[in-house]
Length: 178
Image 1 (spheres, one colour):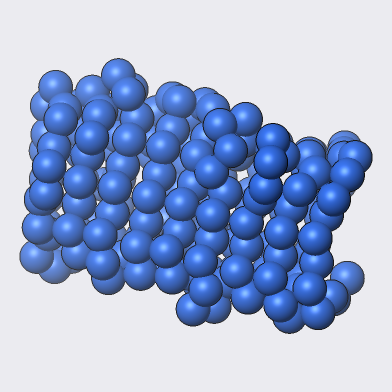
Image 2 (cartoon, rainbow, N blue to C red):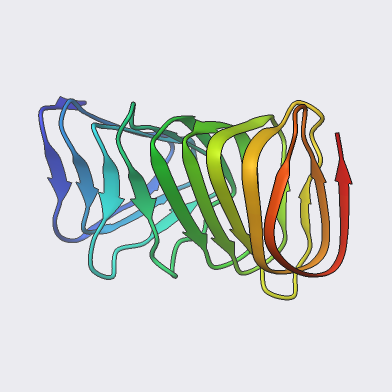
């Protein structure tokens, strides 16, 4: 469905095979969203409010153009997240998180489990990765990061096609290839 502005206010969209929400304006999720199939969220900014959460069993694709993506509720539980476009992208996941392909200016990811990837990630600005005592493995040779900060992580492996700048890193071990 296409909307000029979309704000999901109450209740829950649940157990859907496929969820595709497309707003020409801002897309704001203020209710819980749960899907067994793919989720696609498109808007001039994507965010969630209050205590809303997103639970996705498979791929979630996010497209915000040059606008921000803020999905920072601690109750979120994504499987794989693809970022088609975004400016400042902030993702919080209560468990393990797989990043698919991604293109954004700034990337902030907090995972309650391991953080891995299935596709190349391109971040022209700063990337901040937080995984507590869990591993971070972003070792796709086609990644292209600007500056990477790691406030917490156990075994961390990064790869980059260009010149990677390491900021603050708190990890048990760190391997960088590229």
